[in-house]
Image (tube, rainbow, N blue to C red):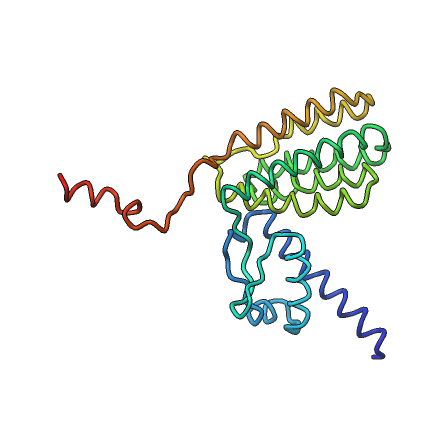
Length: 237
């Protein structure tokens, strides 16, 4: 194998590892703060630690992995303040994307998006929650592709996966995530080239996602008195 072939193979390996970890984050199979051991991942995927490092570096660039000096990589774990910033950024990007998609989406784009919604609905019917979450994320990424703006697509990849981490950490309870009915309504507005309706529907859709999150308090604490407040109260009583 010559040097060019080795580079192509290494690049393909990077893409495979990256895609698997990205999908695992979208499906919420990888929880926030999960340690990503280079050694373990190398054994799982049958690749060198160099390949693993490159894949993790790409994910870190997108904000879904944190690289800690001398301590290795972990799945990102946004705190409440970071979550608010991420959700605000996603709203700005999503509304820009839907405006462009209303102008540029082709019949082929819409057909592909409708197929994704159908697959998402089938997964929900089967009780495959993880796959339905991933397909919902892919729906939003495909919308960005239909918008035809490469920088927005890059931002969206990062924001969709970071939103999945936020949902995994802060969701009030099991939800339907991006409702298929809302996706269908968005596609109907795009097909009609009704830009303002599409923007309004997307804003409502994002409101629905935000409403399921509890960002006013962390689910855990480093304050021992807070963690063991019931014990403190029982002793003082």
